[in-house]
Length: 195
Length: 146
Image (tube, rainbow over all chains, first blue to last red; front, side):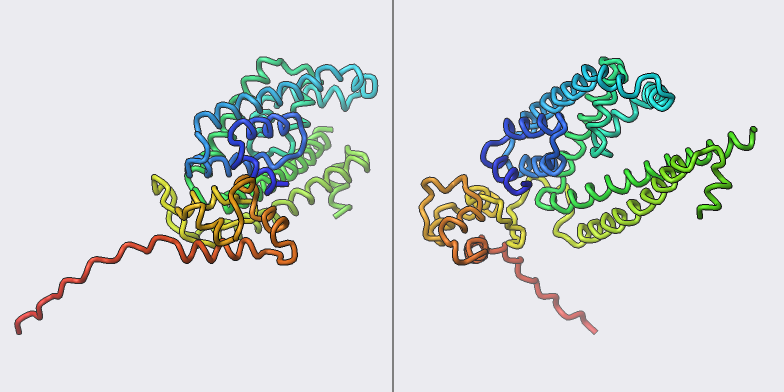
């Protein structure tokens, strides 16, 4: 899949990159980060114009993210009919209002595996769309210019950069799980000590 | 481990406890697994080619960077070898082939020889790359007087 898409990006340039990151924003699993890093390297080789490619990519991915937010927004009733007023749901909703902005920002480029659930949850929990959009834009700008910039900077070594960054994403996800687990256990321990 | 978890999280029910322990262990495993892979990638990176920031991009010289998703025009641009030379080496016409990857060309024109196209392209690139700039001649240093 990655190889096929790379060939097509060489052939069709920035518009195709825009279509791919748009579909990625909708939650279809595509190797978007790899393509963004590669696009940076292609820009350095003069295959793509970096200004056009980055502008198209940012706009496309933001539209994709906004659509997946709207999926969550309009499926709220269905979700509520299943989880309505359960303590777990209320807790999740409360936590998202508190931590949602950071989740949106970091899931755009650091832990991309959770980007779709975060978009859906943002919509379902009625996280303010303007706020969602601000953190989404910030995160996507970091993703496109940061990762694409690394591809541009390291040129033909972009494959190694991609290998490092994709594994680094796994490390970050591990850290998130670990911190969440330890924090939850710590909270329960505090409750026990207070009791 | 389970006893420690029960002592540490007495308020949690067994299902919650399992989820939390599972997440913590999964987190550790992910950190270990991906950490090692990231470290290996980082090491690979250190050994590769020139340092970053060498603008504008010089022509690529390492033919081991040719991949089968690349097209002939892309390779031609990357290595500075004219397209007709590459098409001639493969014995195919550019017509209708300039958007095809090396893998597709291999499937279409050499279905019985897997990987032959990439090998021909690499050999052609090696044979046609511009020679490196010769070093200036050394100036002889006169022997110092005793």
